[in-house]
Image (tube, rainbow, N blue to C red; front, side):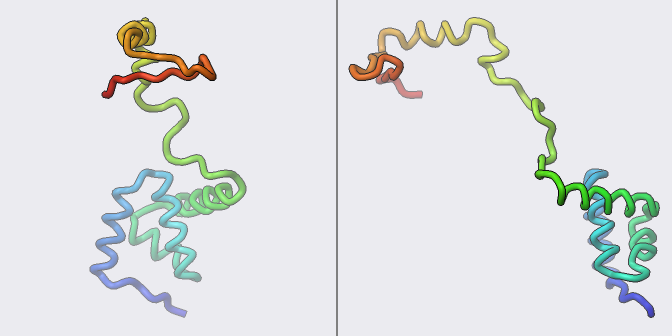
Length: 119
């Protein structure tokens, strides 16, 4: 049985998309495409994306593991820019000093404060 190949224009778009992905998502995309095509699909996709058989096997493992655990997203925890409160020493005290004359407390709950200042 011969597999149904994609049209040349679609193959170009698929290759461009594949090349734009991170390694993790390249494996997954190649695996999904190979499984979608069925028998012979893996060899066609390997040739189309110029990838190794291990790429597809590793992608299959990735997809199976993701079904077992909660999706964690692309970025690792703790990444990105730290907040200014974490990086600038004394900023919280300086902020409270600036708004001190423009702040009142709630008569019912002293932990609630209001200010008449805007951004």
